[in-house]
Image (cartoon, rainbow, N blue to C red; front, side, top):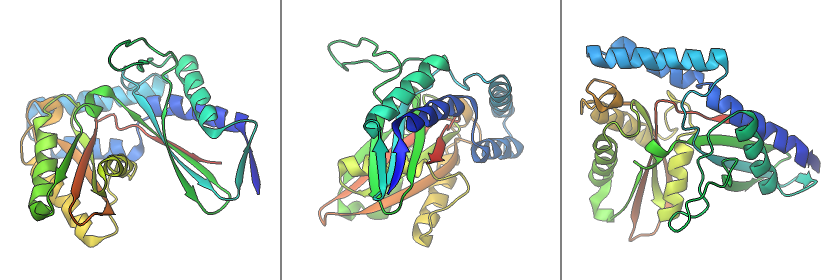
Length: 281
């Protein structure tokens, strides 16, 4: 049995929240630069130049890439030989999130009641936490900060099985293209297919954790990812929805088995500031 201290989780999560807000992952920045090199629209070129410049300033000065530092969405894998000592893992993640928000001067974006009392909770908590139980003695925590502009543009469709591949592709393309400039393109697109309505939404976000440039291991789904990326970019929506060749940087698809009468499809969109951080304790 491996003992992991509550305080170590708090410290790790605090650092992750701050680092994710400041530093764009290398794979995302590489794809933005590649999009700039391939872009032929002058306005789109200028926008991508500013995005690249902004990422450099944020990393160099240790300030947020974007003022919307997002909902803190965590994916946790905890081994069956791990024991957290000193408190509950969920409490530790929320405490680390609060400290990262306050000490890192990140925006507090969470309200306590979505309808009747939209009072800010302070500290950007509670976080959204998804937990998977695994074998082994590691505790793996991955953070996906999710800005409101891009989160609002996601979608869910409960298609009929007869809609098949054409229906899936149409829904994904329409969701991304119709979002226009709202999610701050060029975007990263996560697609979850199968499971149930809630499970499809979770794996769509998990798809966003896969680095840009890494296709699905299943050749059929890898081909679907490539086809979706091509067709989304052929729309001409472009950076910030103002025209251009680079509406999306990457499309990642994950799938689950589903009921014989169902074909759930969820789309989760990340803005060009596709932030994430991970640690293994």
